Image (tube, rainbow, N blue to C red; front, side):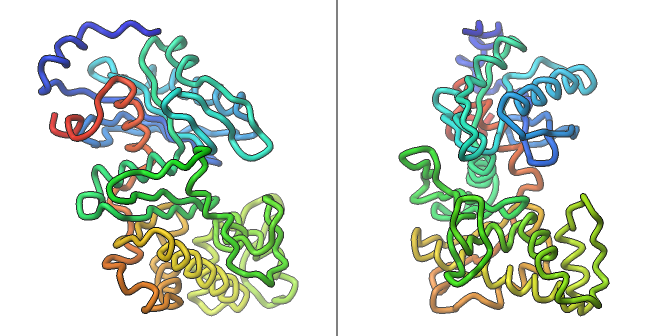
Length: 337
């Protein structure tokens, strides 16, 4: 157990205390670190390479990144805590990273390891849960108690705020909407064992895989495909805009699949807002194509459909929230300081 620092008593008696948290957002291709204030302001960031082959390797990458960040990007004062957002299932209450993906389960007491390494309190949560909670506190959550945060990046996942509460699920596995089947007749096999999952059609990885699978049917496509390199979704969007038939097909299939996912989710939780996050959703072209497939009757109660996140670094800010919770700064008090 980490001994609380001297300022803790002052904080407990005086809610005007301010400070910052070291936040860590683990992604599939990089780790983003930042210093985030208790008001949700990102002061500085630094990116590091990541390796999510296993939890052991990923956690060591995180530890190395934190050590370098503290050394090369020092804060003017000691950080209040460390907050970490990771992929996979997380028991945030106990600080345990349960698994990085199905089949790779190495229950790891991340908070104990980080606290013993750096001598500072640590909190951990799922990465999309972090982004959703950040949006709830600092973004669209100020206008909505019922919204879905839909993250479309390398993969696809979502966070649900229902009546002002985040939905965790019985096994801490809610929000894995990338495995919603959107095409019962699809021959696209997903890693989960099913066919037609939206993640293999409309995620960043899905775009790449569909291009590879269909390229032989479009020999005149000008899209550059290099061995060993993932084709970026933004490059596919640009080619589609210019009329490249391969890219138009891939984008239309992905847009239709994403719209089907959105409409299915709307029927489940009855949100008034759908917030988009992740690299794929930065494309106005793609978001526009998704909107074209939405059924107005299905979406009639969604006042704000497919709005973009208000937070440029929602995952990082959400990771900071996990750190704040670890030291007892929860609810509105954390943001009135």
